[in-house]
Image (tube, rainbow, N blue to C red; front, side, top):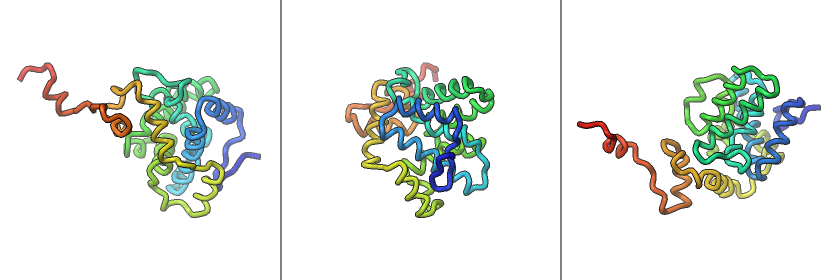
Length: 212
């Protein structure tokens, strides 16, 4: 029988079991439980909007969205979101999902730190950012019942989550600071490293090689 939390079922399929094992092995407790909560919050919030979402795709999107912060999947020359997106795309294609389905999950993960845009794409893209915004920022908590919130947190607790996830973000991006330009991720580096200097978009325009 499929595992069910707050009325949301985790598909009992080989693809989902393998996704769980992969992320369980790669991520620490903070990132793993966060990723599972993202699946449940995102699924609850899309359902509240009357959107139908493929549960396997939503699950992989939720589970893989921070995989790029882990040592096993992080690169040093691109955004961590892209690392997770590429891993998810390859995983889905290897498990028989279509290129379009894999692309939707790629977009969901690649754009999960880009506010608003995913909400104008397919439900399989929107579901991840809806879950992320709830778990990290508390957005959309009013859309959930007290019982739903309690059941998800009982299944996947949040001990000192705010501090632990900030540390996970920093540790996963500290050696590739240039990849945070144009994203909210540079806020994290600036918080932990007083010497970090953000790139300035206005300065880049003014200092470009174009003659006036």
